[in-house]
Image (cartoon, rainbow, N blue to C red; front, side, top):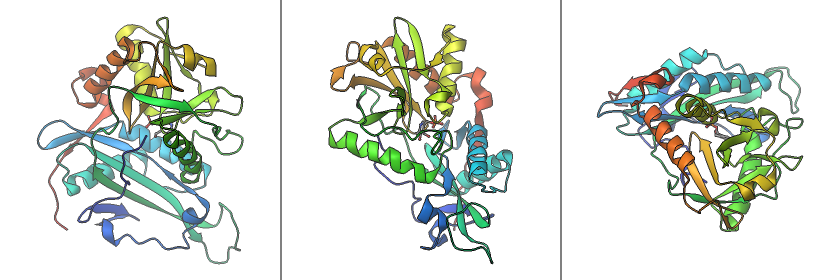
Length: 322
Ligand SMILES: Cc1ncc(COP(=O)(O)O)c(C=O)c1O
């Protein structure tokens, strides 16, 4: 499940790079980059939603940056700015880039080069790091009427090898293998099992199942990224419907017997899974719980739900010419 485009900014856009706003086209990273060679970077994907002709809102930006800082700590990357400062930097970046619609922000903190005197080798200590944030216009890209998924033959990387809860660039080769296999087989996306054979997550989204009115999602101990959209959905279901989502081990067989399945993620937002492993899920159309979650999420991100206003950071756009 992909946007069909890279997260690279268009020409004429600003980037925040190593402490300053610079033209994105001037950011040059060489072949010696440690993160390129060993996958030692961490990243986030954050959406901004238009809320009027000149205003948009970043959605849960502080939570994304807090997660990035904790992912970075695992790789001994010093991000520099705090989560609050990163929100301010991003607001300024969006303002400068003057996006007129929905936008996507891609912050990346990564290892760059061995510090002087540090011996050659794959290591985390004695390696400098950088921070780059880019933004680009991006609307919804996943069909809201439903997608097909297949269980991947690739298993999710276990926490004991490379923690899925940290958004580490190198780990996404695992996700790319699963997406490649799924799309070659004619599915829209893959669902990963973990090493124990239980449901983990989709290629870049968390999985929820509805069965006989109960809602479940794989627990934090199932080798998942602890999604911010997942957290939003758990809160919204609790608040709006009094439904407590079961966070537990989810068996593969539950995918085949669920009334509804949906995925959650910043990129895909809330997307119904209407076919799993070539079989219809429930009636084969988005189910009532999925539809209500989609509506509640849309209201939250579009600033139409005053009770979730704390999740939004306003951005007032005035493009700054390069
Ligand atoms: C592997 C993986 N799982 C889940 C998610 C969903 O996380 P979030 O809702 O924070 O975007 C993502 C997307 O970032 C992801 O890459």
